[in-house]
Length: 239
Ligand SMILES: Nc1ncnc2c1ncn2[C@@H]1O[C@H](COP(=O)(O)OP(=O)(O)OP(=O)(O)O)[C@@H](O)[C@H]1O
Ligand SMILES: [Mg+2]
Image (cartoon, rainbow, N blue to C red; front, side):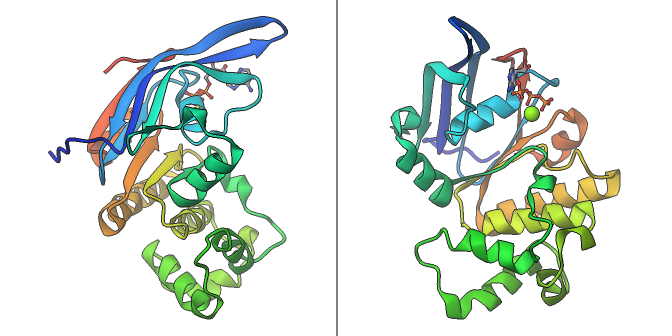
């Protein structure tokens, strides 16, 4: 097992509450876990236990009715919970990418893959127009496409669910994040494509030395791929 002294991300005693009218009730009570560089950690637990809320809090994307009411989220030694909008945006652009749940519907149906990938890459400051074609081809090859040119000119409806998930992964990787949070990246896929996407995440973890938080309620399949498993139950980390 790989052990490092300093975690890249440290979620400490996180509590998230839901606000409605004048009422405030905790939904997540005590979530603590660490991510060390270049490891893949699975966050599992039954539906509704708070996995997605935890991931949204880490990148500053909680819906308006939710607030962090206790605890810390420490990234590279700094508590990021005090961040303003600009700092959160920068964190999402440069450091932590979140592949949101149900993201398969997130691709624009009337734009080619190429156009959408370029839109994503433009967020990076060091974007170089002349190298873009090669960069896109490399990214698509890294996520297992043998004919990147064809994929770039395709529209999402021309691709299968597994292919779209790989395009989304390539888009996330184009930002060169340090941490990738993939929230249920395989639930919409059949068993064969599920294994393909998880094997791909494993390959990417090693090639990019990427730290991955893999969120899934499918305890069995993540056990095979993750280096460690963090188990949640009703708003609390139990292991
Ligand atoms: N928009 C919302 N309004 C009200 N309650 C919500 C909302 N989103 C989530 N919740 C509640 O917060 C809790 C945690 O939800 P969350 O989406 O984090 O669960 P999850 O572990 O990701 O579940 P799943 O495996 O189904 O994706 C649940 O009890 C849910 O009912
Ligand atoms: Mg969820």
